[in-house]
Figure 1 (cartoon, helix red, strand yellow):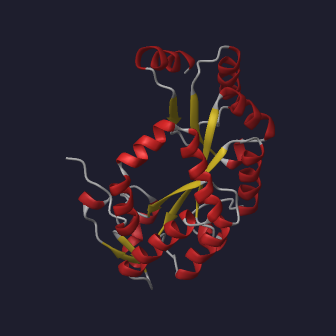
Figure 2: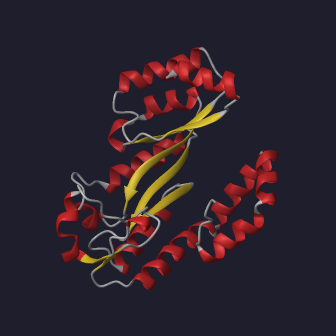
Length: 243
C-alpha cells in the first residue's frame, strides 16, 4: 500500500486519494503498520477512508490523523433504529453517534453514507434520519436511492414490499426504481431534495464549505468555472451526463 502511494505521488503527482473499502480498518495491525510508515516516511499525501464504527477508537483515529487522514466515511443508512433493525444486525445508533463525535475530536472530517427508500421507509422514518444526522457533527453525506439487486436477500420478495421497476439502465442507486409501500415516487424525490437542501443550507455547513474554499485557491477556480452547473444541479437535482 505504501509503495503504491509512493508511485502515484512520484509518477502522477497525486496529492490526495480515497480508500473506498468498507473493511479498510478490519485488519487493525495492517492499518497501524501502514499509518506508522506514512508517519515515519511522509509522502506529502492525504487520504479519505471508510470505516466501521466497531473497528475504531481514539488511538487508531489519532494514528490515522497523523498519517494524513483527511476525512472518514461511515455507513449510517438510516437514523430510524426500528427500520434499520429490519435490514441490519446489531443496530446501535448511539455507538455510531459516539464514534462520529470521536472522529471529529481528533480533527478528521466526517461523512455519513445514507440510503433512502428502504423497504418499510415512511415520511416519519425519513424525518427521524434527518433529525439524527443533523444532531451530529457530520460535515458531508452521500445519500443513495435504495436499489434491490439480484442476490441480495431482500430481492426475493421485493415485489411484496413495494413497487419495483427493474430497469437496469437506471439501477445505479441514483434513481428511485423501488418505491416502498405507502409512498409515491414523486414524494420520495421531494423528500430526497428536502434532505439535501436542508443540510447544505444550514449556517454551520455553509460556513464549513466557505472556509474550505477560502483556504484553497484551486477550489475557488473550479467552483467559479462550474458555478452554472452547480446551481443547475442544486435547483433540479439532475446530474450531468458525460458524453
